[in-house]
Image 1: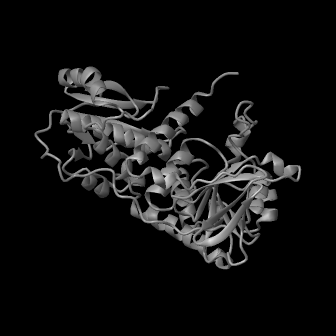
Image 2 (image 1 turned 30 degrees about the vertical axis):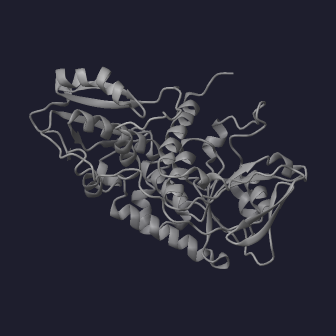
Image 3 (image 1 turned 90 degrees about the horizontal axis):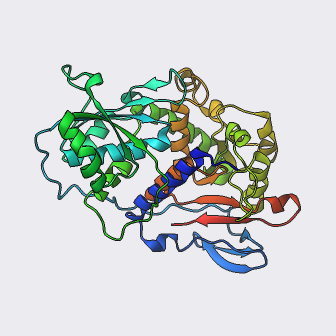
Length: 411
């Protein structure tokens, strides 16, 4: 069987994200991860509510309103500007582009910031290139330019565009591995930069060992700042997402305004190999029926409000809506006057950004698809004190009337 390169890249970036989070979170934040095996019983607590995990199910006491949890305190930043040196005179420019969707952007930003900082170079604001022809955008179309530039103040100088006297054709193209190291910059980037003066950076994602080094390096704090402290959405995008979240909470009156976000995209399910792994006996994606049965088995009421990342409604999702009538896609909850811009066409950069941020702010996140999107959402949720992620497992047992296993990540 051939290897899907996209799955390999996603796996590498998933590790990268959690390595970064390791600098923000202590080990005991993950100690409450529970996965019960069939036939075992275990007393656990969710927000002080007594529960019993039996046969792989989380069963709540009568006092509980459902398998909901409260957030925790946000994690402390994994970077510090207190010891930053003053930025010296720029030795040249580093340019780059954001590509492949918002789940890749944080890694590309982090690598560019690390390289520019080490080289004492000026970083040029990137453009955004979508996965479809014609879906190119300026940075300010999606992200907050002033926030980005201010967040890097004292770390690296940022300009909005190259000076007129520098031609794009004169830039030396340089590729760097994701989570670029100081040694790689010294050996493979700095000589080109000193020779050419200006470079265009592109991040690639090798299948290398991502184990964390025992000793913290001088670029770790800068990389962590680039990954977690630089990107915020521009005001109109924030307004749209906030209005959609408010709409979901209004629809969730019977669950105290709480809702679930499920990353379930029909196009990916059609193209992805969703068969169970022979070695681990675990699937890497689940369809609408499996998710619906799983959520009911875990204990969510039929009045639970669910947001799906699917761009437009598909008939195959009807089985989920039959069980959970309050199931919505973005086209049904977005303000009508905003659809022309933000739902211009399916799978646009705007849609991907909306999904990423709604899934990061929901009360519970359920990844029906494994991959980099899941890793980024998990990173944002854990860092912001929203660790409630319900990962499906052993759903096949549901169809035969058996029990299911699920994992709560509770930081």
